[in-house]
Amino acid sequence: MTNSRVVLFDLDGTITDSAPGIIACIRYALADLGLEGPDDDAMRSFLGPPLVDTFINHFGVTPAESTQMIAKYRERYHDVGEYENAVYPGLPEILADLQAQGATIATATSKPTESATRILTHFGLDGYFTFIGGAEMH
Image (cartoon, rainbow, N blue to C red; front, side, top):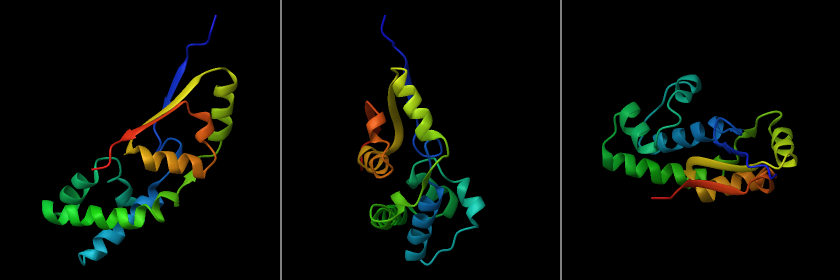
């Protein structure tokens, strides 16, 4: 009998603490418009929803300004920000144990697939995953 267990992980906030890089990139985008954000603890509460929602709902910018901010955010994120995070302690061991038990391990994240793949590869975790699924870049 084969093991049919599939274990699905989110990336941000589950495998890695990505808040430092995301917050730094939000601050970078805000600075481009001459705006300031609240402290890091308050910013952490903004993480999760799509950037367009975060920028419009929490910073009161227009849709056009939000588009500009997203471009600025990505400018920093793809070079620096996506690596400004850390794997949660014990996660590599959990992944290794699941793999040894024959589980199929996959991710599902709202982060673009390319970014998720680069992050997992950067931390040497990509080999544990049968499938890395994310959003399409817009």
